[in-house]
Length: 468
Image (cartoon, rainbow, N blue to C red):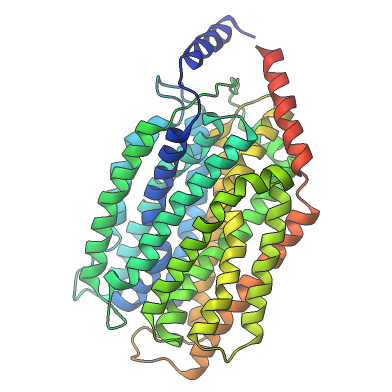
């Protein structure tokens, strides 16, 4: 080990000894980071397609292709930015946190620009504007989402504390989801029709709320873990270790599937309730149920994980969700109320993984360090995030393409019966299949059960002590 590296580790150890212990301030601060991220993310993922099809008048299939390409682009920028952040020297505020402060304002401005509508322009203009503004937003989103996600692994190293951190992050997502899905239909639509001015003003309002939340995250969270970094900056070595890391690859796979289901659900549900059930008010109720199911389960997560393990309770809950969606598919004549009641069980089934997915990520980042001796939080999180983006791209792109295939036309006053039945089929069968795939991956492929996860934390601490 070089003399400079030894001195740097001594300095970091001295700095860490002066930090306040992990506590509720970190949890709330980290929660606010996801409130900020998700306000725009949920607004864009849930309503931007409707804005493009109903306000810009763009073809749903074209919009689906745009979303898919943009998510592939974002996966690429995630990887670049993760490696960039990992190879920067930490500041006095940490390795990752400063980027939240630096990049939040540009991101918010780009998000507001997504919902600008200039009346009377050609379809070509609207399509070009959509491409440029959406690609810019995706690139800037990487500059915050990657450092923010990687930061969880350096706030605390304790597996149970990380579970609580993941839970609070998911609470942030839930709060944002509650705001967007409950208020969204009220703020954005007039008599079930999208209103361009309302979309822009809502984006502006959410931008102000997001900026305040980013600043709360920056000021309340503290980075504590300072493990050895990759001094060689050898991306080939990192890539090789990633491709041989079974837990990491499995997390990539089932997260890709989960995000595909979640994003597809968000996209299709707008059309399902707006067109099939003709009730955007009911869509607000579904948004409230989705958020409240997470909040209701949240107090139970930590004791359940402590007793049974993350892998075990997640596989069970996803099985419940899959069964609920299969039931909805097999009962095609349900009205809006019984449909929504059964749907609630599907949302509860997904809520457990939503609360725990970030804890899975910190576990596999630790496993990477255990295998390689390298702490590459940003790089590994960027690989994970890239898998998420691909899943989101598949979901939103597939959503647009499939809506186009079943015959949806935003310029029509009402859709045909075949189109409405097709939308209902998509909203039930696709999530059911996705959740079944997740259960199989978790139960039979993912190796880090409760016992192995707890042992990993012990073994990794011992290796760190030996290095120092």
